[in-house]
Image (tube, rainbow, N blue to C red; front, side, top):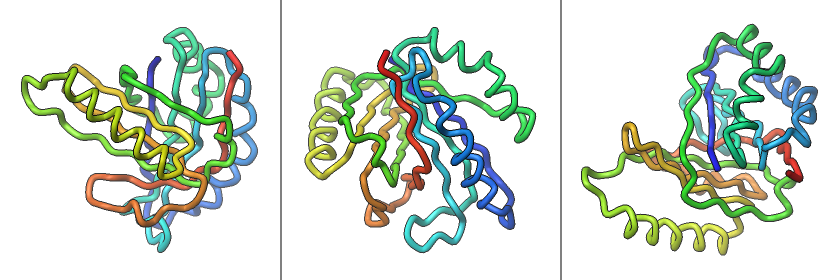
Length: 188
C-alpha cells in the first residue's frame, strides 16, 4: 500500500467556498477508482476557530492499494485539470507500514496529519510496534481510519487519522488538522 498527499497553499484572502464547491462537485468522481482504498478531500482554513490552521489549504490524502492505481490517477484527466487550475503540485508518497479503516469512512468530518523525522539509525521493528500501539489507541478513541507510513529517502514518518467529528482538541505543534469534504472509496 501507498499513502499519497499533495497540499496546495492558497492565498490568505482566497474564497475557500471555491474549494468546498470543488470538493462537492468533483469528490464523487473518484468513487470506485481502481486501486484506491480511499481518498479524503481535505481543506484547512486560516482563522478557523474550530480547526486551527496557519494557512488556507486544499490537501487531498489518498491510500492506494498499489502503485498501478496511483499511477493511473496521476496520469488521468482529473489530475491534469487540478494541475491546470492550481499549478503542478509536489506529490508526497509514503510506504504504508499499517493501515486500519472502518466501514464508516464516509462519515469522516475531520482529519489529522503529522509528519515526523525518524532519528538516525532507528530500530524500525521497535518503532513499528510503538506505532501499532498508538494506532490502537486512536481507534479506541474513535478514529475511522489510521494510517502509519514512512518515506525512507528522508526518513520521515506519517501518522494520518480520519475522525467522525471535528476534533479541535487534537491541535498541537506539528499536527495539521483538516475538514473532510468527501471520502471516495473503492471496493477493489
